[in-house]
Length: 439
Ligand code: SF4
Image 1 (tube, rainbow, N blue to C red):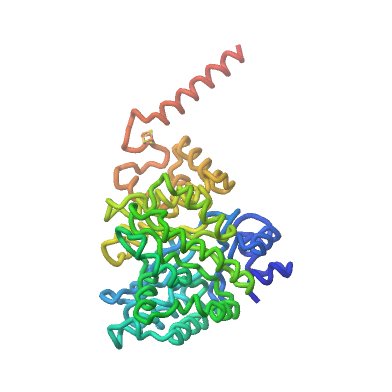
Image 2 (tube, rainbow, N blue to C red):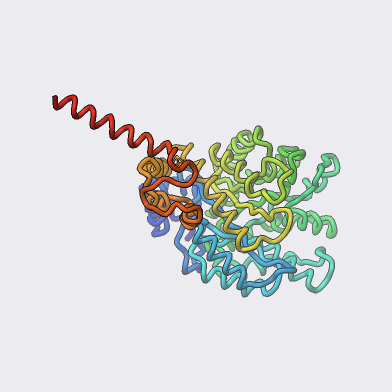
């Protein structure tokens, strides 16, 4: 039985208890949020090493790390290393987006090693398998796509991105709504290409019931992909994006009717002034299902720094209600991320998620910042490292600049350290006061 059906029945599962503990809240609250579709726990019944996480309204903001091979760089050992690095850096989920090498082996190893939920885009595997035999994506049979979904489900994938909202209606509408960067979603573009070549409807849309049956059997959470997400600032919040979003809103209800957990993916590239509107619109059109945003990137001009452009948008989006942030690395738009890129991306998005948690008034986040400020005031470096988002990096920087004494200032201001000056001033005044009151 899925977490959604369990919650609707009024039962609290072990997964709900685990999430309640993680969120420092009551299992009853988690059950109620799942029952209304506002929270999901992606937890395939076959993913044995999983420590379940909750995603959605009322919980801490979560982040996802994309890993996976490409055609040109297909070392699955590297991807396993990326998995380890991302979990160590604090990711809440990973997506295996492999399209090179042995896809089954890579995915199975990742699931076996992962304590966080694992997501995939099954269409990537189906397309890669087809394209290894012919140059024509149109030769992919819908049955093959469903066979891949079933294979991945059996392996223990916890959530899958499916571009169900990319329909023939949208393909037609594209003629009248030109875009600067067309479609930048891999899954979206493949689906449009397949529909056009076959003059047929999107099989995932046409056979949505069949997809839901597989998801219900394994309790896979559906992540309704945004195949029409804007790929540049110029195309943000356009007709095509909103047409797809409205369709996804309908599909959310159908998934719930089947007892399947569902979240919805969002843009993309969005200027800061449109982020709030995008989140509120999505939540309204998709009945408050958890919202999974890809960045969003708030400018197009920073290749090499897109982990920053996306984290700015991610923090802002999460403040307005986005629940799950897909990280972006410095390699975005340029190449497959290295292991260092993955670590940078995860840490940058942990900062974005934490900044949003703080602004949303999360008690744990507020406490951590309070303790960090206290440690700064006390020049307590060990405590500062402990509370840091990346303790190793903080320690390395301090120690490499000659600041090795636990209670001394750092090399930034040296003897002009404002913290030290004020601590001494305060101590002097306290002594004066106690002398005066003793006279
Ligand atoms: S030396 Fe300057 S930067 Fe370093 S702790 Fe003191 S005030 Fe802060």
